[in-house]
Amino acid sequence: MTLYDLKGRSLTCLRDYSPDEIRALIEMGLEFKRRYYAGERVIPVLKGHSIAMIFEKPSTRTRVSFEVAAWQLGAKAMYLGWRELQLGRGETIADTARVLSRYVDGIVARVYEHEKVEELARYSRVPVINGLSDLSHPVQALGDYMTILEVKGRLKGVKLAFVGDGSDNVLHSLLIAGAKLGVDIVVATPKELRPREDILKAALDAAAESGSEIRIIEDPYTAVSGADVVYTDVWVSMGQESMREEKTRLLRPYQVNRRLMEAAGGKALFMHCLPAHRGEEVTDEVIDGPWSIVWDQAENRLHIQKAVLAALIA
Ligand code: CP
Ligand code: NVA
Image 1 (cartoon, protein in one colour):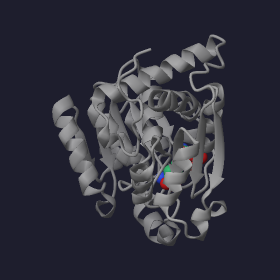
Image 2 (cartoon, rainbow, N blue to C red):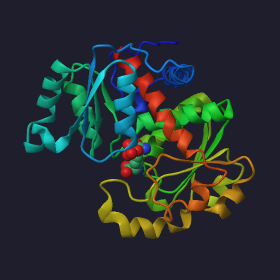
Image 3 (cartoon, rainbow, N blue to C red):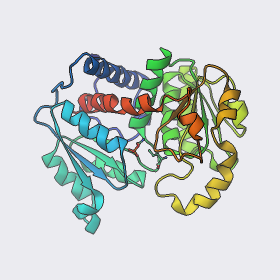
């Protein structure tokens, strides 16, 4: 297994990771999956280690895949609800990081404001892994590119069309990582919901180096034409409930349905980080249809989580 110099590093945003480091993590994820299916369920490179998992908002995939990943690496993971910790009574993030990192070997955190995961990382002695913030979802993007590589056999030159909320956290990570990996990305989104400027700039800079093409447009049909992958995410992310009416109005023309998938052409696959709001951003016909690889995509979270934990902590 290729091991780059990732030991001891935090992973709060993929902006901090080089293309080679991202590729190494994806290759490791594929290797963990191959070994799992070859019968090596437990690869105890983290025997005797402990992982704290602080969650400020709900999770199914991230929580369970990290917990199972830790178990399969021989480590113990602890799920800690934000409000059950003294954090919920006002203990500072810095003090929490200082104390937890005297006990555990790694911290996974899912937070509302991205600054919180940055602050945890600043005061922690052990690696901090972003399990989703309002800005980004790096471990999701790593798993997604692992899935695309697995299915398409390559990443460079693959055309990914993201249709929906251009300001989405998952999209931000797909843009950063995709640009570094040479994936061509076209985003179809209303002009009110463009990606955050600094993220877009980082993606465009990375794309200039990798030779990939990044475009932000408004028309979903133009975006999906000739796409290898059509990707969407919910219209209303966790914490944005007060914006439901406005975002739903803006995003209604961006539903991924049969008509859009057929317009994409024969080779297009459908991806979604999940959870899906069926009938909003995607129809049942598409998510349950022949285009969909969402369950393989969700499964790969387990194997990429093992790669991230092993590389950063073991
Ligand atoms: N995709 C994802 O992170 O799902 P959860 O919110 O269930 O963790
Ligand atoms: N954009 C979604 C992703 C969930 C995994 C959210 O933040 O709620």
